[in-house]
Image (cartoon, rainbow over all chains, first blue to last red; front, side):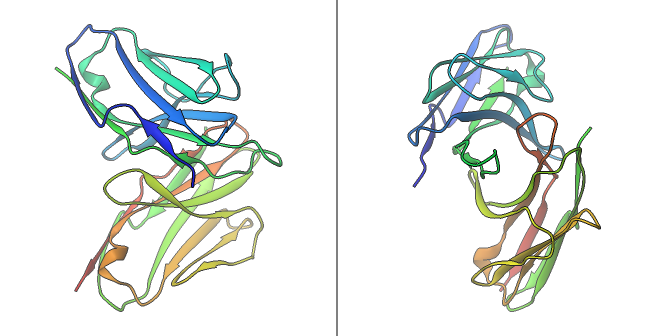
Length: 115
Length: 111
């Protein structure tokens, strides 16, 4: 079974802080993704990565950055947290396989509150 | 911009009923459509559809893709209270290589 582990289940931070959300997968997947989930808006893609040290912007990258120094780990960074970044953050991974038609597997999510 | 629309947004039925959830999409360079079930934690994968007209089945759940109509349905027969969840439809297209998700259908099965 694929295991995608997010470091924190709940996190509370203050406005202006630098926040790190960590995600680790144990299946040697090439692709990793960060989404945020908000009521009424569904899941929206923030950043994704195809390989180590490689990153691509998703639909809502503003205010975020990412780091992928090792294949199994993909970090989401909030450079200066703001209250509108209070949300549920979900990490996912998928293998490349034939084409890229592979389902993504999700971690349990980090519920982040910015005060 | 890729777009995925699910209907209904919420649905309440009784145990034993059959339900049909709808998903329509507008994407450039369609690759695949996926259904996920989300309970209290992360979405769990149900089906991936890439070919039109081929039904995928898993127990009481089934799904089919209609590329001509740019849509898919998810059927659940003989529903049980454990089927209560948010069902998410997502599409992989030619844009950003993550998935574009619909807002989900919140399904509640009453005993």
